[in-house]
Image (tube, rainbow, N blue to C red; front, side, top):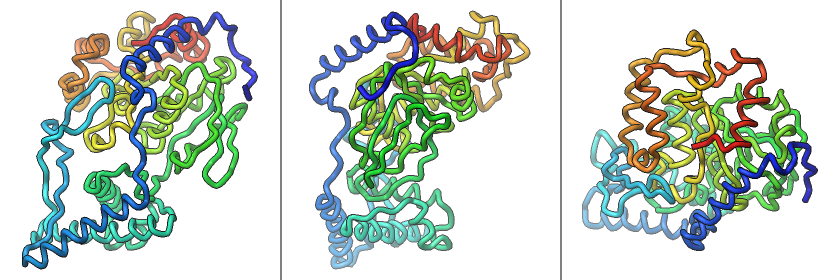
Length: 396
């Protein structure tokens, strides 16, 4: 193996190894498809054919003297979403739809923008070239108005064509970081070694193009916030807990960070843990990695990692560790609404320990950031909290 572990002795990882064996057994029960993970990307010819079919439908509508429209699955309603423990949130087969009409004052501009971006995608796929979402926006920033418009239309097109977004040849700009026992080769041949870096490596913008991924990591730690991630880097956490991998999406994860976590899980099936604030926002972020989101539910198979476990900060840890009350923060009205919303989601029913933790938070009406652990000692997180959790199985 390419890496020389500098971390704890083998006995430290016994519980982690048992957990991995349990995960693998669970996958085998789910069949070969679960072990492979994800759906295959659509080929260039399939994407081009799908776009051509859309255009032919428009021409047929015009020939019938009807106003053409795009029919897109409605991804803003829980009625259209089902939950499967092995996949996460995905769309039901008989779902409601919405129309983007060419003869409606409310949607005519949106219809035109979808057509414009469809033509760009067609040229990109045909020429086997790539562009970022930012590139698309700057082709006509005045027309698009803002980046969010472009982002939403690209998601709509992916859903409309029934192909994974990565097959559209449009890349997202990555904001995530990765560190630890991992090396890989990027699509252009660049060799990247994340091991031994004092600073993290940016998550690549083309996850699909990565090859020759090598790791002997015992676990993957997803860190919610960049500040916590940087603190763990400063404390040499990756070396002290070697072999391991750390990833952060710097808050709500971008698509590439989610794709990378999914790829690492599919390839290596190592335990994946989430370290988030003990607040509704942190729990929401963890749920996105684990179960996905409504807006991207049509691509759940390519993005979700239901095997993720909640390592910390648990609301029950606050009392157990005697974290000072003056470091806690009262839940805002918005926090309480978010917490109520999460508690009503379909996946909470199969996570009784998660529910219990959220009920502790709801009852106390308090939340805590990971930084609250520094009031015990400045390096408590990296030297005591995480090592103990990992060694003794302190996850749920």
